[in-house]
Length: 154
Ligand SMILES: [Zn+2]
Image 1 (cartoon, rainbow, N blue to C red):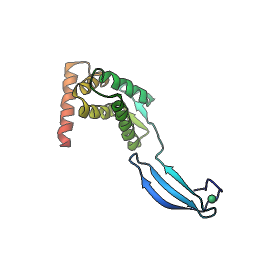
Image 2 (cartoon, rainbow, N blue to C red):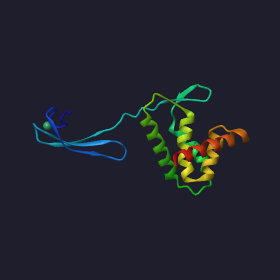
Image 3 (tube, rainbow, N blue to C red):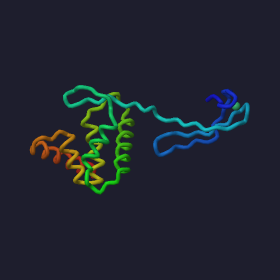
Image 4 (cartoon, protein in one colour):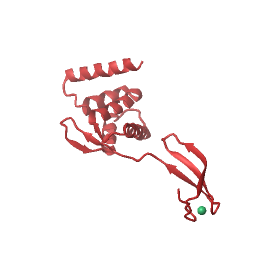
């Protein structure tokens, strides 16, 4: 790492810390000018392409997730910050997968998982609208799948 003060490459790491978002902070000392500075290393934010149900691809959109969540959470006792946190956690999980493409269904599942813990009504609304459950059978099937998932986690 190049010293930001004198441009020397003779720098030494004197402290390393991990923050909860998966970043690494390092405190460095320059061997030439003796000054100190910090660096942050973080995984590159690579937003994957989203594969839709009809197998078309579209750009990952955090706004789209937020819009869906707002509708699902309308008139529920859920603070707006909570929606922001959900999106952050979902984005983080998607980035951790590290895949260039992701099925919209997987994103839906991650959001549904979050809502399931937060608010049952919002969760059901989301599942019905955004997983495109347009018949009672599909809703039933989804409920069965989610129940099985919950069962397998226990
Ligand atoms: Zn220096």
